[in-house]
Length: 196
Image 1 (cartoon, rainbow, N blue to C red):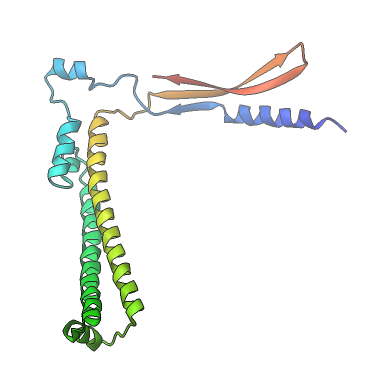
Image 2 (tube, rainbow, N blue to C red):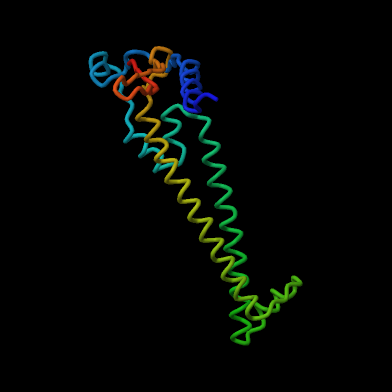
């Protein structure tokens, strides 16, 4: 029975041979380099301006970057989390007033809360108050995160505004086999050649 390492080596060599090829992604030069922009008199796309636009009005930086499709996504996210933050806040205030009314003996808030058919023990009502407060705070945090992420997104898009994606950037990969005469072992490797 032949040695298993020979099969492993043959399999590795065959796999590397089959995987050799070329990937293309970008042109050899980036045409909107800073020097060329100044020489040709074109306006440079500013990441700072995009960030400031997004900070002032969410989505405005994306419009500046000509990524119009992102604006409805930003406003949908902000709108959904704002809506749920308002809902959770009203539920929190209602249950907090009911709990405080029950503890202080003021039945006006608690009676109003009981008319809706919800009856809670003191512990359950307090737990409900804490739950709605935590949910409200979470919705506010998610809203702030979307706001900050859209600013970062506008800045990154502005940095990559002139990044050219075409077929001329190439990555060549091919198998490479080395034989060590001292040890009598062959090793395989993958050679990557990136051309700009």
